[in-house]
Structures are given as C-alpha cells and as structure tokens.
Image (cartoon, rainbow, N blue to C red; front, side, top):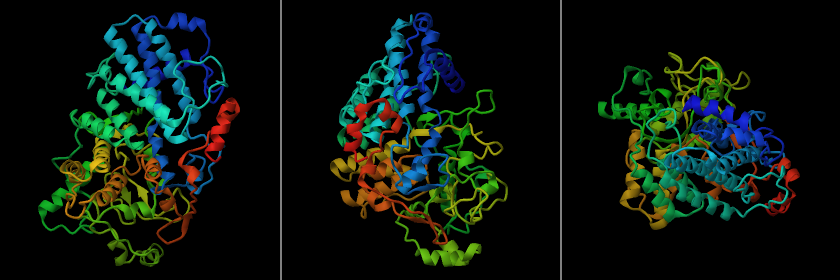
Length: 559
C-alpha cells in the first residue's frame, strides 16, 4: 500500500479536491466535469479512497505531542507548536491541525457522497465505505479531544466558509464517531492479502476496534472499552519478541549498568532490549503482529517522504537535530530492574555528580539496574549505541551544534538502518500497537471493577516482552495502587508516541506535572505554565474568521 496510497493521495487531491486552503473548513469545488468523468470505474474509487488515507501520513509528528507534555522538550518553535504549548503560550495563533483535519473531513464526505456512482461489487463497495467512515470517525475523535465542540459535517458542503454551521457539543461528536465505527466494523476484513485492490495497511476490523478502544478509554466509557479491547485481544495480535539473539544484539556492553545474577538473567535482559528496540524497525514490519494501525513511510523514490525521527531524535554528532528530547522527569519515570519505582538523586546531587561534563562514578549509579526500556529508549551520558555507529557512546555537549538541551536524547523509534539522509527513514510509525490495547484493557478493567487476574496478565505480557519481572500482586492489590502502576507503565511503554499529551489531561494531572523542567546540571530548560482551560486547545484564528459561530464556543473555553 505504501506507494499506492501516497501516490494516489496526490492524484486524488489534485484531481478531485482543488483549492483546499481557501478556508478553515474547506469547501467542495463545484466542478461538474470532474464529477461526471471521474466516478466511472473501481480504479477511480480506489484512487479516491487512497486519498482519504493521507490523514495517516506523517504521524511521526505525534512525537511533538510528547514535547507538549512532561515527557519531552521540543527546542525549536519553528518546527511545531509544542514549544509554546508547553510554556503555556496558547492562543488562537496556534492551529494544532484544525484546518488540515477539516480538509480530510471534506475529503471523506466527498468520497462518501459520490462512491455509490461507481460500478463495483456490492461487498467491495461496502468495504470501501466502511474504511472511509472509520477514517472520518478517527479524525472527528482527534478534533474533539483537541478542541472540544466542533462542527459536525456529515455531507460535503458547498458554502466556502460553512458560516451557518455551529459547533456540535463534544459528547455528540464522540457519540457519532463511536456509532460510525460500530456500524462500519462488520464490513471490514480482519486482514488484507495484498494486491492492487486489497492492500495491506488499510483499516481492518482489528484497527476499527482498536480505534474504538482508544476513544472509549479517553472518554471514560470503561465497560465499552473493555469489550472493544477484548475484540482486539482475540484477533491474533501479539507483542513483538526477539526469541533468538544475533551477535549484533549483544555488542553493546550494558554490564556496566546492570548487575546480572547469571547468564539466564543476562539473556533475558538482551532479549527484552532487542524486542523493545527492534519492534520499530522496518526489517520487522512484515512479520510483526504488534502494529494495528500505522503511518506508512517510503524512501528512495521520486515520491520520497520518509520517517523524520532519524533526524529529529539523535544528537548532532550523529547527524540529528535533537529536536525532541526526554526530560529529566521522563528519565526518572522508568522503573528499577525489579519493576519498582525509582528514587532519583536530588537535582543538586545529580549536577554535582555530572561534574561539568566529567561524570564521577556516582553519576553512573543513577542509571544502574533500571527498566530495560530505559536503555532501549534513552541516550544518557555514557550510553553505547553501536547499532547506529560502531563504538559510539553518547556524551552530552551542552549548547549549540544541534545538541540536546535536557542532556538526553531519544533512541526509541530510530531505525539504525537509515543513517544517511534527513527524513530518509522508511520504517512505519505506530499509530496504535497491541501494547496500547493491553494497557487500555488493564486501565479500563481496573477502573470498572478493580484488580483481577486478567489485568495482571495484560501488564505482565508487556513487562515480560521487555525482560522485566511480573507485577507484584501483593503490592498492587487495590484499584488505587494498580491505577498508579498502570499510569506509570503506560507512560514508559508509550513514551515518544504522542499519547502523554492527552493522558495527563484525561487523568487531570497536568496541573501537577507541567512544571519547570531542568537539565542534568540543574539549569532551567523551560518554565512551564498550566491553566485549566488548556485541557482544550483554542480554535485557530483562521477558523474564527471563516465561521463566526465558533466565537461563543471559543469564549466558553476561556479563550
């Protein structure tokens, strides 16, 4: 699907949806010639549907949402809105994807209004319609959880500004999205065998249930989220695991940081390290059963637009920009190797141990015997990364040269197979993977009825894949205690994947965690400000100018 969808997206966009930047919510061009000449074959419908999948393009930018949270710092304000959002400089000058999402709403509606004109089999027609409906539901969910009440457009509009369309209450938008997916899922296959008309990578029934799980969890519909998650859990998905270690998997010596009791413990660690790291590599995309919905990327072609995290995450001495870097709070969040909360040193002690770039022995103690996913996800001073550059060990150069501001870099989601060119990563970015569904099930089930064996099993599956021990049930034996563990496990497992921004809002903890963040030397990185109205983003000014009906809702949000 990679070339077909992205190339077709360009084809359909230029053929059927011109003038797509004219307003905050774009209008359908009234080109009767295109309507009478385009919808004539199954190929036309396929091209049009492929254009709808453009919404999933460039999902690697979701990593910037972590930069808008306490997980990370985004240092370049010209790259994204993450820098001003984290600092509390939130106003109508920021867009946050409002206009682009309505471009796709318009595209879905145009497709759904016209696809019935196409001569094609009834079953394929139903499947095409179901795919578009799920994509539209996902887009409305993203709009609603970001902006709250938004105009709910179910058909293609001809008014260039939709000046008469008032925003629909958030709850009603979400109910619409849920109903759309529930209605469409029965017309979707569990998988696609490949080929020109049945491409892998499209919306499956499993993806629809996974999207539904995310929506229901976000809005506290716990019983429904449990049911939807169980549908996914019974659909054959599995966490990615490396069962046999290659020599390259053990070339980095972590014995400096981890005290292995025996060879079996050492092997478990390296398998966990490889499993967590390599699930995001292109080489494993065809065999992994973990990815449920992804943003597909291509490279080395005339239509090249690759995964940019190879550029955004690594430090300057590896050709990266250090655009989005982990905060100290993110590093502190990783468990110790026994799965217990880590107690960090004080900020002043850490700065003293770092010793102005010449760390003493005590500095390394902070990173000893920690969660395997710390070593798979974060570059801290002294970290080896021979997969990327033979013999490489990370050292932090404070200031300039595309260096991290926090003192740390992400290595998670970076495929070492792509090391030459900016934006050249061809690996897919996970929009929803099976680990998220296990976490969603655990959270929803715990909120619904408290701890039980199925919750521990879901969490232990995630931990075991990373080479970590099972949850100590005697310690986490109440709803409140298990809630804390699930929240922490979710933060660790999904770091840099864009979920933390929304999690701290739905858990109502943003006021507690959006604080000034500091680097290794205890120098301030960014002063962060939180106001209750920041739970929802403001409509952008272009949308307000185009649709005056948004203004009362903007005021009601406190902007």
